[in-house]
Length: 548
Image: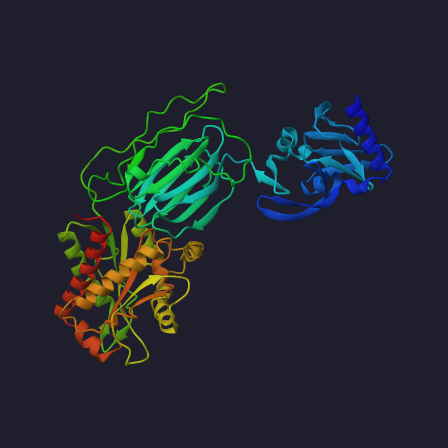
């Protein structure tokens, strides 16, 4: 009785405007699906936040009616009706009394409700949203069951923490040596994002929604040799490390993220032992076309049975997987490339590419060419061919040209949105002119998507370019200058966009240079150029663990 008397007395004093000094006035931010929707008036007392009912409800798309004389507010939304009365700690929702824990108050002519009102399950259901109050912000999110929360980076490895609710399963797949992809069937992600860690274990994290599934793509760093996915403390934890003994959490490490957003508690579960999956290598790795084996699927779970997360088992050992390389002779067919003194770039490109392909196949690599005859292939089609082949490397062979007849020398490029310098930008523009030969019915929507694609393999592409440059520099008998300080460059080459692997574009020399032209027109020099490029690819593959 005494507590009720105090609550009523306090509310009455507010109606009279007599104790405003008791409350801390301020603003509370509203964020809907990650977007800032402004703020609303709020007051705080004893750790409880009260929000302006009218302004908050309107920002959330509800209708509000105020009854000043009765000190009441009515909030309506499709399938939801609530009546709030100042001085009462319960609200009437769809005809039933629902406790809030704290009383609604009238403050300076406004009806203020404890934040608990806006997180009521019935309110969230009516909005078809998940609502959380944290850090003086009302977060309104779509109904999701999977969210990235936090990361932990140590000298031994990286850990990624993911919130999940319900029966969220996963399927793990190695796209190639540098890419780990985890698919969550029937999962809805809280937010799509791309984050670059840029360390030795994880380079990039990308999470996206694809219709009825969520996809997590992880670009691995140079020390990533082992990884595991486990459920611990109601979280999914992805661990990436170099050594298997570093996969288990240490006693001084948190078992789950503490600072990430907590929407609700996932069902508690006992931590399961980490399942170690060795990183792909030439030795003992299943071919990517071999499906990953899982435990047999159970029949669809009924409402009263919990669906267990899928546990991925290592695929059975099969024949050694070979590195797949797509060799791309630039230009072709109606697109001759650069022309000087009767020589056509497309002819030299194809000749060197064939020699390179033969060397790679002889060494045991699995190789395809985008073209092995004089035919035209659209630039966008070349990257698609590489992706369909599931290539681990993409190597495009070209010959340079310039209005400056003194320009000469070997160069190798990897893609970036911004060119290294003006000359690099001009080279890219020259090679991108091949677009003019594409048919009128060319799919410009596809071209736009390709142009927006980001090269997630920029670090590996840079590394591959360096190996190739060094090997060509060391290869005797070529006779084309290789500047070790400036011959590896970056530019926005269209043919490299959208390639799902490390990708480089080689400019063997300048067809516009009399010196380079005299060398590249010789069959012997073309073979030596192919040998130098091959040596660089071989050195890269060996360093990256593809070869013994």
